[in-house]
Each structure stands twice: as C-alpha cells, then as structure tokens.
Length: 470
Image (cartoon, rainbow, N blue to C red; front, side, top):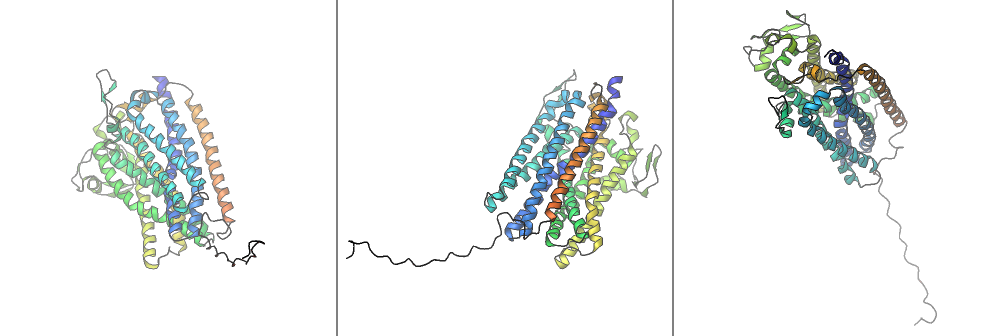
C-alpha cells in the first residue's frame, strides 16, 4: 500500500499536466473547423477573396492543431492504462465504448480535414465546402464521447456491483447518457467555441494594434469574435444550470467550490477569499446569495463539507474556490466584450474603432484559456478523492509500479518541445502570410475575373478541288 500511495502524487501531476495541455488543442480541434467553414461560406456567397483566403489559411492551422492534438491525445489514452490500471481494469468495459466511438469520430475528422485541404484547387466551390462539414460534425461527436466519459466519472451509471465487488450488468448507453452528460457536454463544447473564438480574434486584434488595419485583419477579428460573443452568454446560462446540478448530485464538490463548511440555510456567497475550517477569510461577501443561486431562495439549504468525513472531502479548497470564481468572473467580463461588439455593430455595422476595444480583444484569448483551465480544475479536483464518484478512490486506482516521477519528467520535456515546435510552426506560417498581399496570393477557386469571349472569324472561302467543280 505504501508503494501505491507513493505513486499517487506524480501520477496525478502527470495526468493533470497532460490533460491541461491537451484540452487546449482539443478545443481548437472542435471549434476551429467551424470558423474555417464560416469564412469559406462567406467567401463563396459574397465573392469575397479575403474570406476565402482566411478559410484556406485557417484550414492549415486547424490541420496543425489536430495533428498535435492527436499526439497528446494518444499519450493520454496510454496514461489511463499505465497510471490507473485498477480503474481501467475494473471499469474499462463500462466507459470503453465511448472511447471507441471517439476514435471513429477522430479518424473521420482527420480524413475529411485532409480532403478539405487537398481539395482547394481540385474540387468545385460548393463540393469543396461540403467536404468540410463532416470535420465540424466529427469534432462535435468526438467531444461528446470524451466528455461523456468524464461525466460518467462524476455521475457513474450503466452497471451494477455484485456482492463480490465485480462490475456486472454493463449498459454502455446508460453509461454514456448519464445524469451529468446533459450539462457537461454542452458546457465543454461551448467552452471550445468560446476559447477558440477569443483566441483567434486576439491574434488579429494584436495585428490591428500594430497598424495592420486592412480588411483581412478586420474580417479575421470579426468572424471568431462574433462566434465567441454568441457562445459566451449561452455558456453562462449552461454553467449556472451545471452548478445547481452539482449542488444536487455532488453536494460535497459544490461545498468545496463555494467553501461551505457547515450545512445551513441563507448561505453567504464569497467572491475570492481564503478557505479555512472556520469559513472564508477575506473576499467579498454577499449574504444569502449562495443559497439563492442553488435554489432561487435564500432559504435553500446548502450541504457543507462537515457532512462527510475529512477523507471524503476534496483537497485544496482555496484553489478550487478560486478556480471556480475565476472561471465565472472571466466569463462575465467576456460577455461585456461581446456586448461592446454587438452595440458597435448595431449602430455602425462595424467593429469598435477604439484601441481599448482592441486591447480587450487581444487580452480575451489568454483570459479564455485561463477560464478553460480553471474549469477543468473545478471538474477534476472537485471530484477528489474519487476517480469514480462514490465507487473508487483515486489512491486505489493508481499504479503500483515505480518510476512515475521519471515518466512525468520525460513528459514535461516532450510536451515542452512539442509546444514550442507548434508555436514556431504557426508563427512561421503567419510571417509568410504577412508578406503576401491578397491581390498577390493565389485565391483558391475564385472569385476570378470573367473570361472574355473568344473572338470568332468567319471561315475563309475555299476553292473546290479540281474535278469537283460544277
């Protein structure tokens, strides 16, 4: 047991690092193809060369992120078996079907992404556009399958435990469509579109701050920022519903998120602050608001951490509380940025001209990434000490093999190299594109100038051959 416990910290650290790295690439893989197709559609409908060029460039960026995401996702799939053998050994037949479905969706996405890129100069306009639609659908399907597994870990269903402790009567569909799937899946998909939209928009906002105010940059800012601005308020509503569901189905997780030590009514909401056994120290207090958020009444009872033994409570409650507050706070600020864009567009059919708006848009990409990582901290740390909620503890699932610190160190080096290489590749592509003007770069399959009609000349009169004259 000592050997197993000694591997828990490095195993959790490695899983947290690789998951935190991969979730960014996974989000780009889910949402970037949609931005690509929106630009492609606009280019075809409005004969807009700037939109078509954006679509072509974004397709190459999407291909890079999908390829790197495939590498990091493969590492994660191996980690399930190598770091958590008891977990996969006992419950693999329950959640394994969802991972198999995700694999099918990923291969579909990769195949049609290759067809889309290859088809720029080889397919007709609309035939090429439709080859990109399966990429978007497969990205959504893959996200659904993976997040369904995480939902199942939070709200396990689709099996029974026999008297001997064996998993029996497995129903993969019940496992996939568990009680948490309804709110976790849309929450993650919206997060992918939110993060990708603000991240891409931030790149073009930086370019505009540096003086590149051409239509290419304005359109490159407008398309992703519009998508993200639409997704953000929807995400806020979905997240609010998810928090109430967690308060009902995982009350100890919610108590850790809000630092509620004792079960009572009229619970105060704290923004920030430090969690202690005596309650929250510091922070901004809003009396009764936590109860109101849970049940729309200050008289709503909220379960406290003291309702379970200390060994069943999530660790690092201050970090968990701050992660939750940071996620909600950033989402709220990004809603304001979307409203700023919407107001300017409603009045002038243009983006705001203020440099403060561009600065805010430039910062939104990094802020969205922070919110994404905070969301996964809330999901994973909040479920602890369980790997499968109320069925298997994390310490009982970890490998007993030694050397996890070595693999963690190797993973840090590998992912650092991979991350640096990805950034360098994308920056090299961007620098090359900046040297091309839209008029100089070859725009894929149009729009082009109409071909002038060929001149026709009357046929020359010919003399009949000798002997054929009449």
